[in-house]
Image 1 (spheres, rainbow over the protein chains, first blue to last red):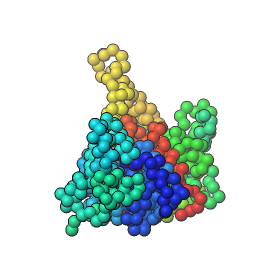
Image 2 (image 1 turned 180 degrees about the vertical axis):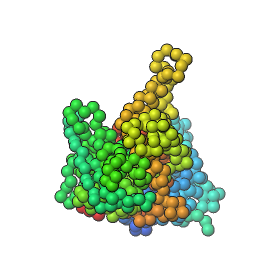
Image 3 (image 1 turned 180 degrees about the horizontal axis):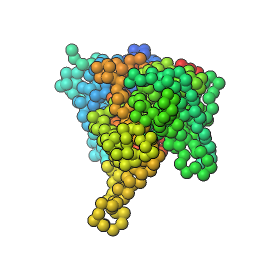
Image 4 (image 1 turned 135 degrees about the horizontal axis):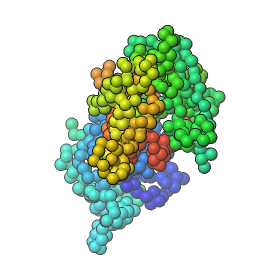
Length: 215
Length: 378
């Protein structure tokens, strides 16, 4: 389910954990947005890497949701709680406001029912974190301008075998939140693990949002 | 290869309990026997014991063989053994025959000490709760204060769940497989048809057929045939038998199709070795199990004292204990913020899938048991 960026692309020197070759800056940012010991639901949790990291860093009480068998086993091997289900069918097994934070890490673009899952996340979580590859990133635009669908570190699929069905730009997602009356409490844009503030929709590769329901 | 993964030749043992057992129905069993088998070695801290609870027609004979030429190993032999998913190099595994059974534990065919005759119709109706209470006696007898895990499929899964509800401090993990928090009306209906087949057999004699030297085989046979239909998926049955004919069409009511031949064979085999009174009681135990009943049907409240960690597994083609029923259990566990993982295994075999050595399913169980710490009691 989850289209996590290949970890090899994230090999960067980092002040927090400079020795770890697989350090994920986006994980660290997500961690910085969570209280210690938070109850966390990670949708499309992939192989459980993020939850394992959050458990080690913040002692979160975490559950992952994943539909892929191999990823499910990988979560189990990491000691991550994992619930096998298809996000497209909603989150009916989870009570309203029963999690501190619900995370959708680089999975939004693979969802068919995009609005449905975001609404479900806001129902289940007091806060929602959504991250996605920014289709408006200049490298993507460049490849389109050259006449081809973008293939990159963050979008590593060919057009004919991609699970991504709802790619969007940062501007698109901002508009989506406005239209759906969703409050964006924080937005961070990264390129090569560095924050981007100048023209983020053009210069940013990965978009990270903190969302809340409007009162 | 086989030599490395089989528990080898095993023998059942019998534990006698002389303290009365209060049953949920109000009846009291003054004394009782439980037949059990064990595989592997109980460690010094007695922290590595895993109890396997059987389903409708299961027994204590979970793994291994009774002799070198025994062609029928225990019913979950593909799961339990050295280097198997439930590894007997690590765990001490216990199989037990439930009360009311017909494989050695006290049941309707046993002799009632007060009358010196078989209990027959007077053997009380037993429940999942009663079984779990009796299991704790066996655990006491073996000196086990806390089980590393209770494992069960179907009706066995209900027992695993009940263990965690009734004895939260005595079980660290529960593996609830192809199970449900209670039966649906449709499931109770199937059970009722099976029971009616038995009860209306002229040789049933109100349950006291032992005295007449007969067995209600026809009823038991039909009950089993019905059961087999519901344990398989439409697809699995189609793939296995299709419309294949046994011989040329005879325009008769003899066996014409392979599926009929299969059902008759299974029915005959079962009727020759299983006790009808036990079948009635096992199906009734299924019907009655409903831990949420006294909590306004709120399973989450019923599980509020549970401490165990859970693995819940269902199978996509299981329509008798469908994935939706397992998800109800998962939801109640999540509501209580318990540690739980849930796998929905894509499998064609219907309810029977929980007994099959599907590689992914076994990888799930192997992974779970690998992670399970046995160092000390929690």
